[in-house]
Amino acid sequence: MPYPQPYKPNEENVENGFTPEPSKNRPDAKAILKHTALFIATFVCVSYVGIIWVGQSAGVESYTEMWPQGVLFAVLLLGFLATHEFGHYFAAVYHKIKVSLPYFIPIPIGIGTMGAVISIRERIKTTTKLFDVGISGPIAGFIVSLIILLYGFATLPDPSFMENFAGHDEIITHIQETGDYPDTPPVTEDTGPGIIILGDTLLYSFLASFFSNVPPMFEMYHFPFLFAGWLGLFFTALNLMPIGQLDGGHILYSLIGYENHKKVARGCFGLLTALAGTEAIPFLYLQIAEFMPQYAFASTVIWALVLFFLLRKAFHQSYDWIVTTWVLSLVGSVGYLYLFGGGFEQVGSLIWVVWCFFLAYFVKIEHPPVIFEEPLTPTRRYLGWISMAVFILCISPSPISILN
Image (cartoon, rainbow, N blue to C red; front, side):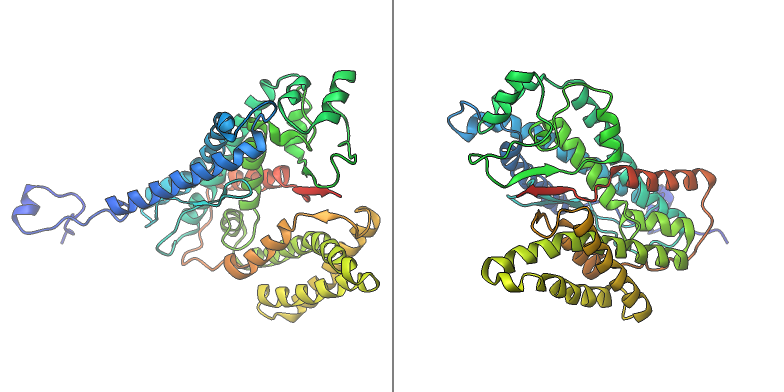
């Protein structure tokens, strides 16, 4: 007997009492209003803090005069975020997976937002669907970020553009004398510590090599297209980490299966904790040295204890993995600080520390199994490994550092 067709109502169905099943991804007015309000709040926050980053502050009397620059930054950054999240959303809709509209998260500090997320409201049953939903956002966002970045490089003003920013007297003097940016940030009694340096990446460095007048990484964030493009690529890389239910976790799980992904994810998390240690140990060292300098080296012991309990949470008390990763992570962190990092007296951003705790407590390290594991098509496999290459090209081991 043929099954009834509730999704295709016609006059006969209506007459016989059939009620069409509503679409699972048809948001009502209340949902649309809620998501729109979050987007508007996020746009306002990003515009506001964008003034601090890209606002041309020389000679202005109030923030109001710099709103156009803040709004431009918001358009660029939220354009990337929206493209990324709607990439996931439309892939889920295509596969008839119940999903929410993107939630934009406003915060009036930092860059004005903690990003955007969608909520998958049912279990994804096959690796093909999992792969499509996972990779669609990074691909869409990567393309938009790349376009923004290339446009920024192609339209760069000459170095005298820095005269539009207050508090850059040493750099402006250097530019006027040499016609180019200084190679290192000028630290004087006036500037003092606290100069923010964004981390270079393989892709950013490669693209920058084709253009002239490229600002150094300690001034790049004054250029809205470069800064928004760099942030887009970096956020794409964060999402492509092959861990848990991040986009990269979905992709790599679909490529290599549950058991192999578990090993890779744990190894990647171990590398991430080593990076976190290069931030946490100097941070703790400086805090302790300020009050009890004779005990400053206890910073390594404190981080070792924190790391042990973090790994217990991440690896579900699998002690062979915990002990091995704990030792290698500590050796890597301390070795890097002594050999390459200039010692313990430096200021880090703690980005990787926060990210490690976020992954361990919220995202989780291992990917939950899907119901049906099926081989991916050759095209999907090709795209999947390309996305892993994009992760390597766009990630920075030290995304934000502060010159002490």
